[in-house]
Image (cartoon, rainbow, N blue to C red; front, side, top):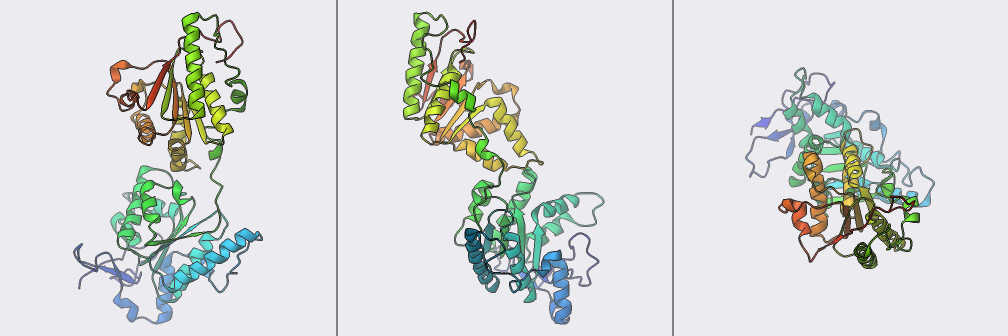
Length: 440
C-alpha cells in the first residue's frame, strides 16, 4: 500500500528523521475517493521501530501543545477555579464530558462559554490524555493557524501550502482552539470551512473551543457544528462578551422622547387641506402598523415631512412591548457592517448582520433606492438583508424621499410592487422644520 508523505511539519521544527511521516506518526493512504480508507490516518511504521519514550517525545513535540502540555485531568479540579456556583456546576459537567471523550474520542466535542471559563484547559487535558496513550494530536490556536497558512504563500516559505494544509485537515486528532476570533476575511472563512467540512464528512475526531456562540458563526459552519449525530456541544456558561451588540441599531433616547404618536401634529406646517389629509392617513397607517406590524411599510415624502417622526413613534410602541427594534440610517448601517467585516474588527460580522436580518422590527431611514452610487459589496448586503426579510415576511419600515419607477426589475424595487406584502404611503406635507422649532 502506498502512503502519502507527511514530512512537512509546523513552522520552526527541525528536519524530521522519518521520511515517511515527518515524525508526526501517521500517514494517509493513496486510495480512491470511494475507498473506505480515503481520508483516514494510519500509524506510520516508524511508530513500531522506536522506544515508547522516544515516540511520545516526538508526538508531544509535533502536537504543538507548548506550555499546555502540563495540563492533565489529574491536575484539574473537577469543580474548576471559579467561585460562582453556576460556573462551578458548568465546569463540573464539562469536566465529566471531557473525560468521557478522552476515553472514547469519536466524533466532535465543541466547548462554548465565556473567556476564562476553562474551554482551552479541558481541550488541553483531552489532548494530553490522547498523547499519553500514543495518539498523534495536533493542537492549533486558530489565528496562529491562519497566519501559518498565509505564510506558506510567500515565495520564501520553506513549507508547501498544500502539504501543511493537508496535515491540519487530516490530522488523526485535531484541536481547534478559539474558533471565531480569527480575522473576518472571506479567505479565512473559506479555509476554515474546508477544514471543518473535510473532518465532518470523514468523521475525524475533533475538539473545538468557540469564542462565539454557534449561532453567531458562518451559517455553513453551523450546519456542521449542530449535527447531533456527530457533535457534542458542551457549555461552560453563557458568553455575553461580544461587544455592544445590544446597542447596535438602538433608537436614541432623545428621539424616543420627542417623537411619539401623541406629539405628531397632523396640522402640519401651514399645510393645506390635501396635505393635512396625507398626514392624517400616514398617522393612522403608522398606528395600525405599530399595533400589529405585518409586512413592510414604506413612507415616501420630502425631507421634514414627518416620516422620521412616525417611524420613531412606531419604534416606541414596539419597544414598549419588549420587541427587538433595530433603527438605522442606511449609510450608517453600511459603514458599521464594513467595520465589522474588516480583519481588525473586534466583533463578529455574522452576529451583527444576523441581528439586523432577523430583528422583530427593522427601520431603515433615508433609504436611497438608486443603489448605483454604492459599492457592489454594499449593494449585495442590502439585497441579502431585504430579500431575507421579504421572504420571511419580517416587519420592516422604510423611509425614503422617492422611488425610481424606472428600476422595477431591481431585486428590491420588484418586491416593493407586491401589494399583498408592502404598503407604500406618500406624505405630501411642508417641511415641519422650516420657520418652526418642531421636528419631524
